[in-house]
Length: 400
Figure 1: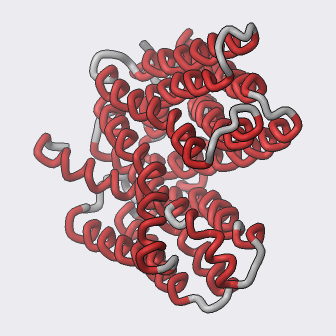
Figure 2: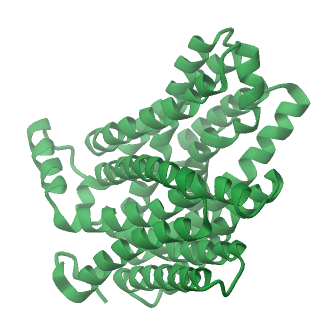
Figure 3: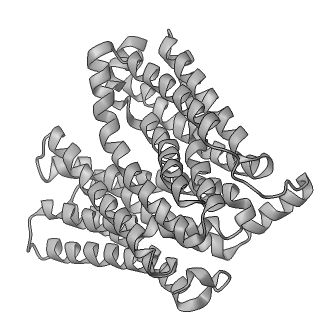
């Protein structure tokens, strides 16, 4: 990748990564109004989120292998076209069943996130890939913060359907951007189906792949625990208002934004495993100190947000390097690897969110919440130490 082309690539890939996040949560402020319009319960309306997530998990498993087999560009164009068309369907839906059908189809946009990571591995060496993924992570971390605000503004100004017209316009604009500015980046020779399937199973059997994937799953799992549990803890123990809770949830994102920036800088001088170990150590140490202070009543319960910032900082350091390492396990199957670990993270996130909901419902305290986050961080740190110590030497460029 030439130096002059780097900004264009980063901008395009950042947009491809951010739009799936915006599609997930931008319309959430309108969920209650939508339930009234469709004359359904709020729990039924929430299927617009769960159905979307289930479809994206399945689609990630499919989009990666198809893109490795037939190329990035056709899969991106097809997924963005489907997303735009489904968004129009949502905007025009007259009943909940029709809306839900098109809403689930909107999940096709997840291919943008899957393939943006794969494209990075196509055009960059491992160290440069980590740097680019760090920059993308910085921009990506802003989407969950800004999207609900934009969605609420659009809904107030023009009704909830305006969100889906916005999605449609964004999908069309991204489709045009990919068509004009993003050439096919996969240079891998298109193998026959039998050879491809064999290679895919070799990826699945790779301990190296699963080690980095589990680091990612448990690291991001701490985020799922936090966002699932902190609303109830904030109300029951901290007596916070809804607006204060919204700002509090953003505390971990602030840490992630900072960590992503540091990751892009550290990757210039350190190997991937070194940066991963730094990230996991910071997350574990910050959460451990927070738990000890809470346990001894040395600080008020709201200090849990300090622990959350440390966890976010650790994740920001970890995720770009771990993502890069995963993509280069089998460079010819980068999209498959991206889709598979993306699906695993969604599944783990659903499991951790469910467990957290049950435990926090019974014990809505900061100590329980931080303890859960610490447990997941300890597991991810243990795997990082195992890799760093040399247990996996399949890719020595990541060891340092």
